[in-house]
Length: 352
Image (cartoon, rainbow, N blue to C red; front, side, top):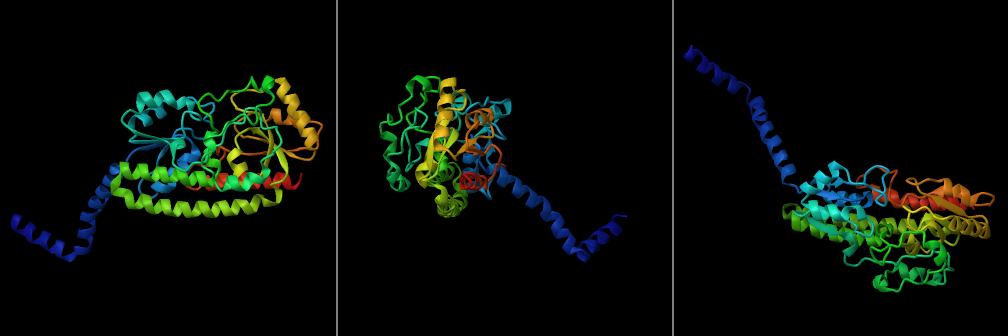
């Protein structure tokens, strides 16, 4: 029997060489793919806009994890057990900083001790604008300077932020922004997104030099796309940029300064704090003075206040989504977010 089986096995191997090679190769390919995934660093991101930029730079290597997913807001988020596990396993963690994701500050100290934690509000080249504590109702005396603001004078972070300090008796009800002296919605300027992308790339290359060329190539492509997006948005909002409007909370300074648009006020300075009756009455009067304008809600927060402030006026309501609550996470989200804001402004203000 042994003599009969030996030749038979040799003959079958000779007759089917094409089948024998793939059968042997498949486990090798699967093993190699598994090793590539295992070798990629575990990367965790805080919010959707940051996750989008990191995803674009990591394409072809791995997918970063996201903490504040779905329609949640970093202003009101509570850390989940799955988030805690992700932070503990992470090699790299990207967040904006304690001024925005205050809920992450202590967990990062406790759980992220083995990770490289990159606070993107420290990215070189960022434009940082001071908070407008008074609800941004003062006249826009700096309107001619919008163009220079869009050219990015990088020392704005050190400017004194008392220009909009009016209405002190009412804004005492609002969050006092004690985490820092600048507005943390930094991503709403594509040039700031470019600065953050540069820091993301540097951090990933240091953590994972084996994939440095991929990160750097993706970053170059992202940089070019952000330049094109900037040009596109300028054209979109140009016809309506001189029309004033009201927003739910004062999150749009960077978009405003980049594109010269006119935000005349906000219902609340910080969305986790409900404004008092005096503030709501003040905004209602302001909307009446503006006449045909737009008041923009946000998808994560109760729109009832918007209905209150436009009641009995000629104002229209719309929705802006500065934190991408309604958008699917991924590398395209940042572009959809920015186009969505520009489109919704244009659509509402065109009819106002």
